[in-house]
Length: 216
Image (cartoon, rainbow, N blue to C red; front, top):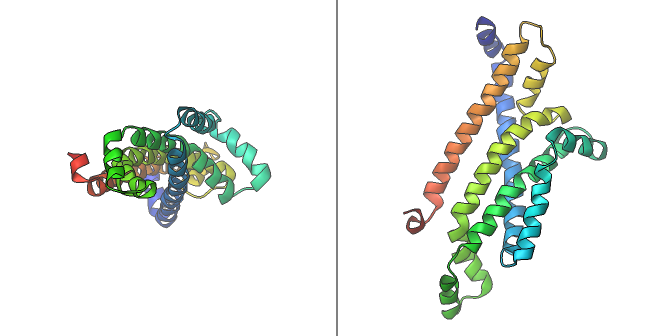
């Protein structure tokens, strides 16, 4: 226990910086995945075949172990941020695409028919009716993607990605030294704590951005 607190005290600045980089990288990658995933969901949700293909392709990324995926990307893009971002975006796509399709597909056709009846065009219906109604489902997909990305980014230290994974890997590589276990433990616990904090933030975002009629 003394070694643990000593490590935290001596490395608190590094821990803060790595925590910030970890959260920042995850949020940016999930935003990129959300832009892509929502666009794909909008494009295919009316087509059962298109929906099935989009879901199957995004599911394929999750069948590839993260170490293997990074191993494929490193020879092409090198070490660092680029392969890390690509891996996180690929892993984040499935929940967002699937939830976008589910959210848009669950909207009562009578609502969109009524909007057409008052003269709204397709884009206005999508932007002012369909996407707001599907937003809780989309946000849930982003929430799931964020939790997955927090763990995957820790593994991405293998590709010299940013974040707390570097502390965890450094500790694991020095097993037997007095600071090895505290280093790996602190990095792992911080990833869990930050994931819980982000999850709480998503709950607040959902509460304040979901229309009251849908929330109730």
